[in-house]
Image (tube, rainbow, N blue to C red; front, side, top):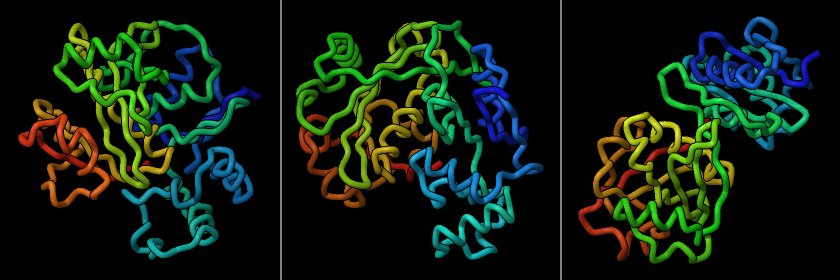
Amino acid sequence: MSPVTIYHNPNCGTSRNTLKLIRHFGIDPDVVEYLATPPSREALVDLIARAGLTARDIVRKKGTPYAELGLDSADEAALLDAMVAHPILINRPIVASERGVALCRPSDVVLDVLPLQPGNDAFKEDGAQFLRDDRIAADDPALIAALRAGDLPVEDLAESGRRFFAYRTLAGTRVGFGGYELYGHDALLRSVVVLANVQTKKIGRNLVPLLAYRAMREGARTAWLLTKTAAGFFDKIGYKRRDRDEAPTAILTTRQAKSLCPTSAVLMAKKLGF
C-alpha cells in the first residue's frame, strides 16, 4: 500500500494536475476514483477532520445536485449523508499521507502533504509551472527590492497582521512574492509581484490562487485587492471590480486603501472557497 492516497476524479483538471505532481516526485499513490468507489461515511469524517476542514468546506456545488437537494441550509450530518449518497458532491482531489490530508485546490497545495524534496520543474496542463511557497519576514531584502522595482508600497510592511510569502519553482528558482492582511472573514491581498524575468511564464495565475488559499485557511472568505496596472489580469482569474462603498470598513481603513495606493487604483474582490 502506498503512503499516499489520492481521491481522484479523472475528469477534473485540478485532480489530474495533482496526480501528475505526486508522480513527478517518484511517488506511486493509491488512486481512488471516488465516484466509483466512494469513501465510507466514517472514512470521510476522518479525512475531513485530518484536513482541518468541515463538511461544508468540502462539499462541491458546481455540476452537482447540491441545489436540488436543498443543501444550503443542511447541517454537517446532513451534508455528510448527502456526500455518501452522491459522491459527486465531494470536492476533489483529497490527498492523504503520513504528513496530513489536504483538499488540493489549487493543486500546488499537495506539496504540503508530500515529503519535502528538491526536484526538476514541472508544469500543469495549461503550461503554468507548479509553485512552492515559503513564509518570509516582512523585512526580507529580496521582497523589498522586488516591491520597489514594481513600484509597489513598502512603507507598511513591518506593521502587525501581515503575512508574506516567496514563491519558487520546484527546481528552486524564485519567481515572485505576495502577502495579505487578515481582517476576520476579509483579506486584503497585497505586495503581489512577479519577477520581471518570468512575467511571460504564467506565474501569476498560480501565485495568486496559492496566496488566496493561505488566507482562506486562516478564515478569510473574501479576498480584496487594489491595483494600479493589473486589473485586466485579475479580471481573467475571477476577481470582480467593486466600488469603494462596497468594501468593508476594515479594508477601506487599511494604509493601502487610505494612503499608499492612489485613489485611481481599482478595487477588486473575489469570494473564496474550494
